[in-house]
Length: 103
Image (spheres, rainbow, N blue to C red):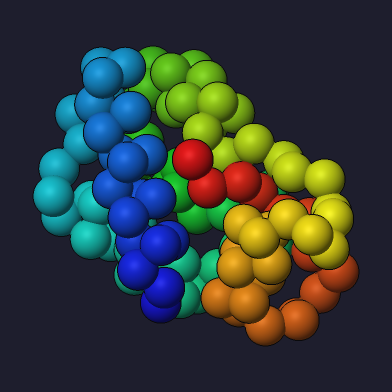
């Protein structure tokens, strides 16, 4: 797992906390571990995996959705974009990537 992705999860968890979700250190650790089992080039799979970790009550879904949309933005595929190449290289070429940006 790339340090960059682990740091992104920590920043995302901070954003969730700022939005009122009671995010724990255990959940942050679980989210980082979940990345090893998710196809992170599939934005919907990333969404579902992180939601399963961070959302514990139905009323937490709307703030989670807002945070996810704001934090994990879709980036256009461009060969000269360093962050997109780094994002792709963390998982290899498993699928045609739909790449999410790391804030």
